[in-house]
Image (tube, rainbow, N blue to C red; front, side, top):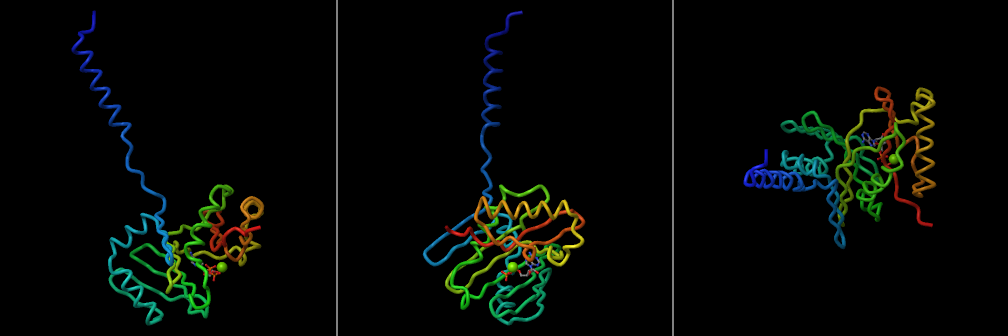
Length: 217
Ligand SMILES: Nc1ncnc2c1ncn2[C@@H]1O[C@H](COP(=O)(O)OP(=O)(O)O)[C@@H](O)[C@H]1O
Ligand SMILES: [Mg+2]
């Protein structure tokens, strides 16, 4: 049977429309958003922006906790706990419902250079050389201006690799050493070490954090 021309045409346009729809790219969600000015540098994930949007009181409450240096402050489903009042850095745990974040402030009076956004960007550089059971901590925000220098990551309730050296399976530890070597040789990132890594025994993973930018040669 000969195909009816108008029906064929109709089918063609239908298919064309369908293909067009399929090809229409979904707006891509950027992995990070970066804003850089003369004196400020901001990096954040769209996920963290959403967290702040959904919890509009969080910034205000955090700034209050920072100002008063209280050990613990709670309001609604938010709890801010001061972990360390150091002379060069301040550390907090911020709980929002079931989600926990780690906040590090490097004091601007001591550290003139930016560290928050730099640490965030360095962590991203490490991704291509990760070994199967090594991970990078989940970074959410890096912020630096004339008054502050912040970093926000996921909070990990885990021991450091350095404190569990004898308990870590040899294979996993060797993988970590391999990762450390690759970071040094391929990326000139020198300071991945056992103090700046967590051991997750349940998942059999090592999670790296606090790495400094590549050393210029
Ligand atoms: N994401 C995190 N969750 C929980 N504790 C953390 C996290 N990151 C760091 N810590 C704890 O805080 C300590 C200092 O953190 P770190 O980021 O290495 O600061 P510094 O830049 O001063 O070395 C770490 O040794 C670790 O015990
Ligand atoms: Mg450290």
